[in-house]
Image (cartoon, rainbow, N blue to C red):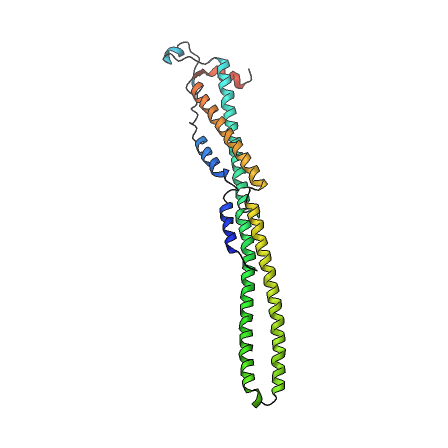
Length: 246
């Protein structure tokens, strides 16, 4: 049975599919992570000339301030949730990369079977040396048998060695054939697994894409706060009242 080593090549090619969405998500995350830092709103004491000192910018009403405060709180909690989900995805990505059904794990299983075949080949090769040694000793015996004492006894010893060598050869060949079959089956199974992403990888990619979409939404919300709230003035009395639930 021929070992088709070239079939392993497909493992390295197919293995790049399983977590393909990771890089795309990392790029998206990098863009989302560049959201402009939220500037603290400027507070002013509630004086009549506040508008004049603000060079014409209108002080937020209490309702506007309430809306901005809620938006800020929502953005802050949203960022914390994004970071939590990202940390979880990073952890799971590491687990998937080292999982038995990952490309690395699948290739390792194939390599283990291949190592067993090579070991069987080495054992069979060593046995071939023993057979060669027997052949040389048998030829030397045949050349001198007619002049040897106890030739029949010596011939019987060689015959028994031949029987033992033949039995060992049969056993080693059967073991090698079995290991070759296991190896080829492992290659076939590996290529089938790597031809499509595993269920866990597909689920990870789905959640990764959802996180990227939520990051973009958060980025838009933070930009909205920076545009509509970040540079606006408000009355400290209104802020205190809102925080007091009034």
